[in-house]
Image (cartoon, rainbow, N blue to C red):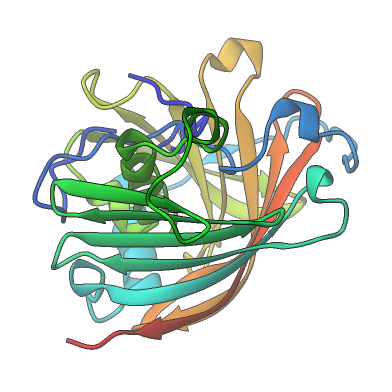
Length: 277
C-alpha cells in the first residue's frame, strides 16, 4: 500500500503501534519536495561497495542500535515538541520551519508548518483530526486542494514524523521483517554494518537498507527502493545528534535520489523539548 508523502517513508505501513489505531506507514520523501524541485545539488555516483557477511544477526544489530539511541526505553512514552527547519532547491535559500508535537501515550499529534508565506496546522487527536490555514479552519476548495488540507494528509504527517524520528525503535513494530544476515560495507565512504528490512504485504512493499556504525551501532543512514532492480527510491544520510527526552535523535537529514544522487532536501532538528508526563 502506498501513499504520496512519496511519502514512509515509503514510507511512510500498517502498524498497531503506540497510537490507539493502526497506522499506515507512508512511502518516504521529504514532505514538501517534488521531483521538479531537485537538481541543484548532486554527488558523484560511487562504485557499488563490497560487502562481507558478519557474525551478528539483524535482530541483534537492531537491539544494539536501540540500546544506543534509546538506552532507557523512552520511546513508548515520547511526549515532546520538535523544532525543525527544511531547505530544498525550491526554497531558494529560504528555510521552511515546522513545530511538531508528538505525544505517543495520548495519541496526539500536531504539526505547524510555515512555508512560503503560509501557516498550516495539522492536528490528530486519537481518531479525530483538524486542519487550519493561516489561523482559519474555513478555507476554499482551491486552497484545500492546493495545500492538501485533509484529515488523510494530517494522519500521513503523523505517521511520517513518528516513523522518521522514532528510528531505529520503529523497526520493532509489528509487520517489520528483519533479515537475519548483516554485512560489513561502506556508506558515504564510511565503514558500516548494513541490515535489510522488508514488510508484511499488508504493511508495505518497499525494500529498506539501514546503515549502522560498526562499533557504536548508531544509525548512519538508510535507503529505500520501490523496485530495487530499477534503482528507484531515495537514500538519506544522517549527521549529528540531538538528545530529546533521553533519546539520541539524528540532527540533520540529507535526502537524495538513488538513481542519480540528485539532492532533494535537508531537514534540520533545531531542538526538542519534553512536554512532561
